[in-house]
Image 1: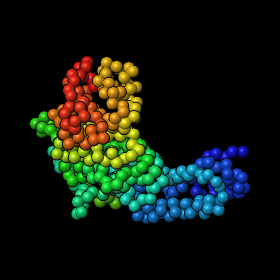
Image 2: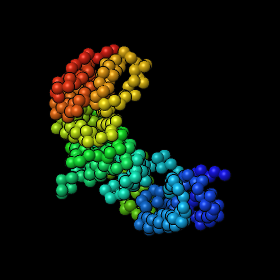
Image 3: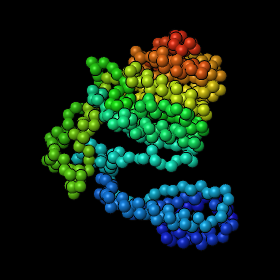
Image 4: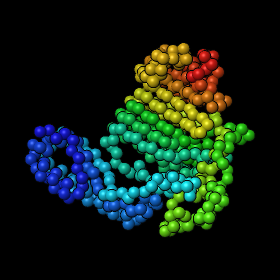
Length: 423
């Protein structure tokens, strides 16, 4: 009887049953996928609300190590051709019931549990990922909501930022075919710099970029006189003082305090220091001094990705959104063509551009109606994108005209948008 997929827990009883069920080599050969659930020690109430203690971390590490040793000591004696797909999952033996912390009316800030993982860092520089084919990582490296503030600086003494170096290393992985960097990533132009080439198998790359740079600058700019204050600037600590006699002292208690009401929620002062309050936004277009170098580096980097068929890059914040799509020569722009069936008049110029230049690399920039089109890519950016025969289209719901590059590395042809410029 075919086993196909097997689900196995790491406890001794499950492992014993596994040994008995698959003692026969013929039965072992039927396993195509093994889902291994590594059981971790129970989670405590305080762990849910706060941080993992050193003791708990050590216990979890020991449980993971022992479980993997128990599994691989068994599999190492098997003689199975073709290999087995192994999927590991981590589950605590028990999880305490905690009421939804967001519903606690005593607090205005989010629970600390929602941000505790932001204080941990994944080491991408040293991880052995040579066999990874499909990679998806989400990082919420958000820009300050208060756009008057200067973003944090992450450049080291050597002039580099580790995150950009790590992403560049990932793009060089030998078997990587698809890569998604979701959320918001603060990356420098050198992420796309290489003396050789990037991964030989990379076909599809998706990047979601935060509108800030690792050296503490903004990719976007605007007129502060047109700012929108989207959140109440009053301190939630002050409003809580007025509504409840049980509000803790404004001096934050220690994080290891037993007073959960005082320490399990993010104080208003933290959110202000981090730039999450107030929401003061006025940046609705790109700053050429910071954004253009990133685009130019991207255009050069793409030509060193020999298998790349498609790239999606998105930069957004509360007030603007720009999407950049790249298609290699011969690659079909399926999303555009699906829409063109239903909206042929609206997508006419973009559709014509795509079809006429399908034999070329195509770059298509599209922004929403809130974007301030006082910015356009520099001739250096256009030249880098057109290198190798590429063409560029600049469209968007906020544009009265659409621009299409002419192939000379600098000039753009303007066409009046149809139907009020809906695209």
